[in-house]
Length: 226
Image (cartoon, rainbow, N blue to C red; front, side):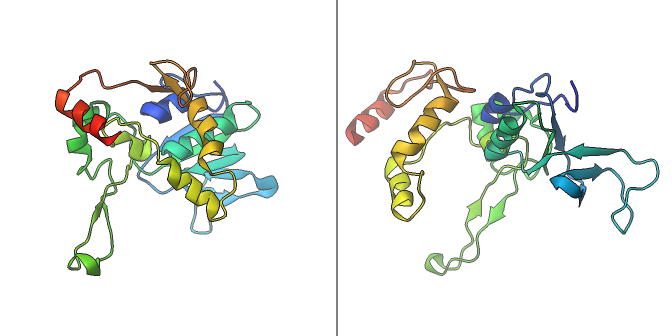
């Protein structure tokens, strides 16, 4: 397909992009640890080149491609944005990701979280500044560095924020971010195996299911929280 590169993206990113075997028309994926030179051109179009001179001009023999949009970061949000931009086939979209493709087998196994949590290959392994309240300790902040972003290293868990947090955003001035406003989009994105209800949807690109195993102690804890 024109401008497409076959790729593989994990979970919600894979579902959003539908490019396990072929990308949507006009969408190209670039997963690389090398820097990519970008020169802005007229009409908000961009020239992506593999080799440029010190002045930013293409080197002789280099291959250039023109894109309407460049999305930086192939995490959950970046993949969805790139997917929506390319749905109409009217635009060519470049999705840039600093990390590798999601071929690491530990990404696709829930137990693999123990591996991806500390892997410098698929994890930026950020740390906070020293925290005075914690004896100046630095806290570890794992963030995904691969196609799918942090959704690729979270143990395949699907979870939404507390509705009170969204309502607080609205109270602080973020119109359209209250719980009642964002819930329809959560439902639209979801394909819940239990079926549709007041809080969940079906037919979306993100497949969500319950954990197949049940544990009496875990059920008791959840019951006590209700």
